[in-house]
Length: 335
Image (cartoon, rainbow, N blue to C red; front, side, top):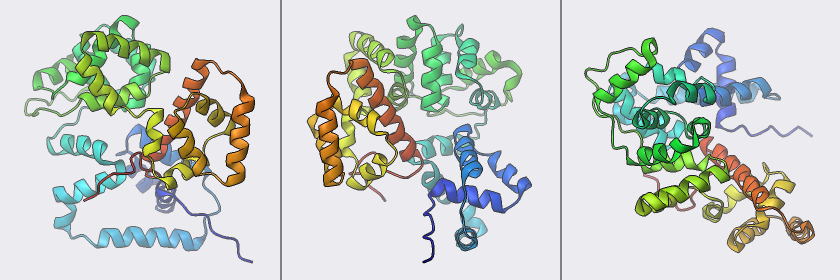
């Protein structure tokens, strides 16, 4: 009996394509990827195996067909670029990147920060004005921005988060401040830059999603005291553990394959009944019964352990959403 071929996800198909086109061309393509994309595809390239010649041929044919469907005019159009970026990165990331591309924004200094260790970035910016720090964090990926925020002095964090949430575009003068701060790492060509749409409530919520539970709660409490409306808006946009009920059944089933049973049991000890029901209904009858037995036998668990387990599951959910494997909302609309 022939062995069933493994179904490859989007990242794995990209890895196969890059492995097939040669080192020089693959390197040139990866040079235009973000650090997070390079890491994801690089890991896939390093670990992928068992790919048949037929699968490789299919991937190459699909890529060729996709390119062939577009004329040179189509490839250069904004609509085509928007579609490609949205398919590759998701709506929010695609819009931010497209905005920078079309506005001619290319900040080498900020790009360099994306490759640095979070603590090193924090050391560079900690003495800058909080508004500058907010702008820098808004440019970073949310998980990296959260690590940088955690490395900043505690008395700065709330101010920075509130400034991120309040950002409504960046003027050329702010870009010039960044040029001065990072010296030679910037190109210095910011005279014709229009307002850049970075920051905002969604960015602040994304950063908060990646903070350790204790740090997140501490910041949110102080933000509530300073501006309750802003705090509520940020919380509405955050993806928290209770939001797992919004993921469709297929997505929950895919997620469960990636979650260790001990982590799931700990996370569910402090979960809303709706989340527990959602998890149980997407398991086999036998697996659901075993999980319920394990939950009863687990006994009391520290709140901090529950929060950390839930954060770990949320990190898996966000990673799989970024890879296009699941949708975090079951009622997403497509056009």
